[in-house]
Length: 180
Image 1 (cartoon, rainbow, N blue to C red):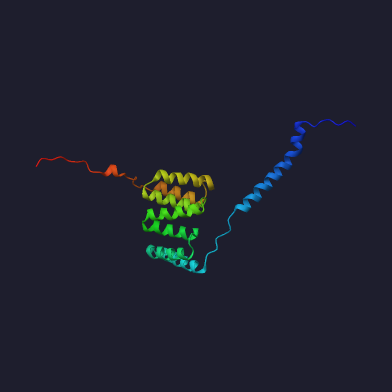
Image 2: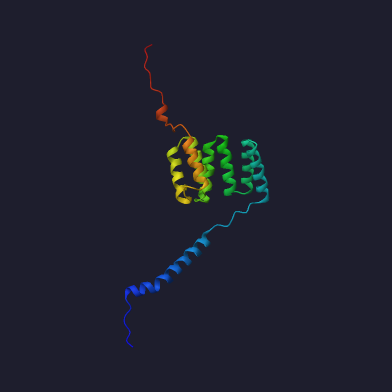
């Protein structure tokens, strides 16, 4: 029996299912190895977080910030504690401080949806709506338009009649010349 050389179409049909299966296996295994383990907090930090949440529920944001800062000393760099602290400072009206905490959390976990949404809300409350819209676009890219964080930020941007950020040049008084 005479053998003929297989055509490109035969090779493609023969090896494509194997190649697809191997690439799928590689993609799944690599994503599993890069996923982070859930954050395990110290029991003292958990107690302080619960104390802060109770203070937030009672409307006492200053006490909540104190409890969250104490929890941050127990668990330095904890994204959970940083997000709670950022949310409490944002609700207290300290958007600049909240932005700092959100950005520290985003440095640790750049794809954290809560941090992106919180930073966007703080930016919107501060008046930086263009930057907040960038956060919304990034959120929608990461999780879609139907995730809770994207919906919350979109609602904040839609209802927020925030004033625009003002530059120093815009508020400098015009010199008035008068005769003595």
